[in-house]
Image (cartoon, rainbow, N blue to C red):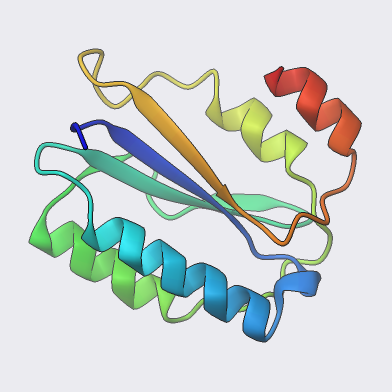
Length: 124
């Protein structure tokens, strides 16, 4: 896998509480531990609202990875609804971490998102 900017969009809605968020965070940890050197990353959690782990994607380093893993251990499915459109509308127009690397966006969800038609039209 080549270096890039990796943004993991994690469903943190009520439907993900319990085993759903546990499985998603386990997958996220595997992804984070497998990124190539020279990459950048961020985690965007969403539900009825959304928030970024970092203001801007951070360079993949031992320090940033450790911080991310500590934060992920606190995750719980408690952000209400499942509105994926708003976070994508915020994320996709943002400048990439570096112009030389492609942005890769991974959505981790149970698939029960609201306005799936509008979301698909937006990214389509």
